[in-house]
Length: 125
Image 1: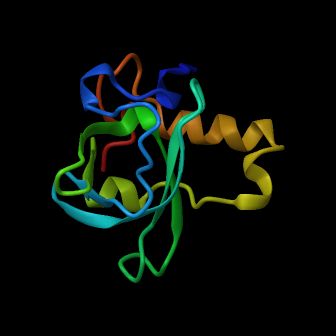
Image 2: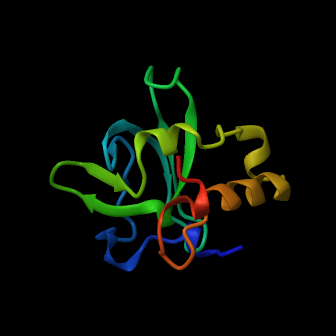
């Protein structure tokens, strides 16, 4: 397991302290939703993405390590993966997020980007 998944990539352009709530989220092949919530804690940074009607209104927790670029001018966050890959992500389970180590491990396993080496640790679709 790598903890890099919970930190923004150095080249992403993310500036610590910038609130990304409301930013549009773009996969490599199109829009996937909007940032509903953003956590910027060092070593535990993530975006909670509301996919709207696209995949039946699911919320997906996207670790910061998946973010490839933040564009403050267009208020867009670009992520390393296709819409289909994002769609296959585990649904965000608010009640398990903070207190269940097995749930966090499952998220890391799905999203594991190694030391920024590519999307989804083998979960290519």
